[in-house]
Image 1 (tube, helix red, strand yellow):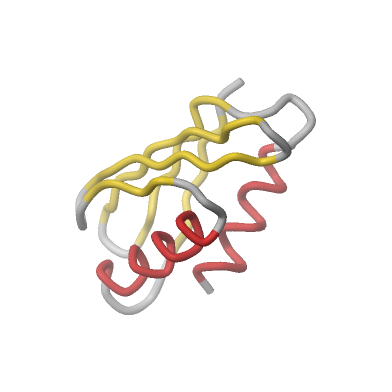
Image 2: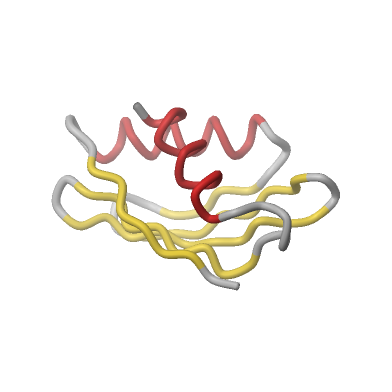
Length: 85
C-alpha cells in the first residue's frame, strides 16, 4: 500500500533533509540522497517503512512504497511533520 503526501517547509532544503536523516537514522534506519531526491527505510514493529522523496521548491514530496498494514499513512505523515517542524 503506497502513500503520497507533501510536506511544505521554510528555510533551506539542506536543513530539512538533515532533520529527516537524523529522525530516520535515530530509529535505526537508512537515509540516502541529496537536496533533490533520495530514499529511506526504517523498521517499525519489526516491519519496514520504505519510501522516497523529492524536493520541489519549498516542499518535500514523500512517496511511501511499503509500510506495515497496521500503520496508517496519516500516522507516518504526522510523525514526519513533527520531526521536520
